[in-house]
Length: 302
Image 1 (cartoon, rainbow, N blue to C red):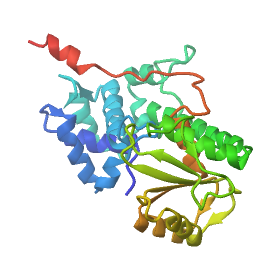
Image 2: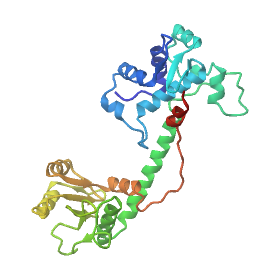
Image 3: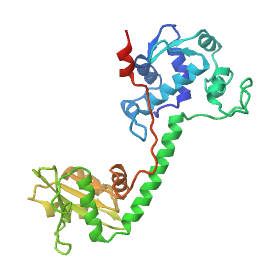
Image 4: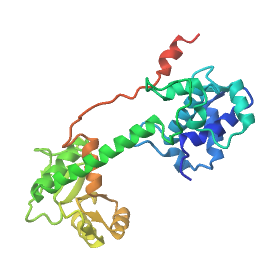
């Protein structure tokens, strides 16, 4: 199943520490994961930024919200212990514990609502709040990235076939592959025998990778025959191939390429690689997401 929302973890988290003993997040993670029958794939799902798993992020925010409401205390870093108020809530056994439920606590209202004109002595109107601040930030980041990828691909489509071939070679060089002079070696456009470029697998040039780069209509679908022709063109040359296009691949082409150890890159993946390696794009604004430096504080521990 999908990783539950952070507020869906609040009640199970509170139950998991109901014995009054301190529990670390490391102890609690498998308990909550088992509660929702999460698979290894579920637990490995990463935030769009790739800096943390979705599960760990949401569980952490569930604990933070319960702390702010006074239902949990933190006796040490990454450790939770239930408070008397937390035990009272478990005895009350509400159907759900979410931000609207926690609004009954003044400390939580002060944390959650930042409007200076809002009274902290009265609960705010109920709202549907199923996203953590990280969720909101990550979703906005993903939307911006998706829009940028569309813009990048639109610019790529404007290139001539020859310029597209050279751009692919240059991108591979930026990604750390070795290259010949002029950032790579492109073969004759009119007599390439299915090979549009050659790069080195490493900086020293021990192995070569043969490239076919085709700027085709993004709505066009590349089938198995085109990949077979490319495999034939590189036969006897080391047989390491990279097929790059702005079009799409049919499933038959993907399956065949996998068995032939040919790497396929379509338009969307090409755009993402360009963004990842700052190729054809430049940073517009930088946000630093900071976290506690546990090594520093551990160095002061007695």
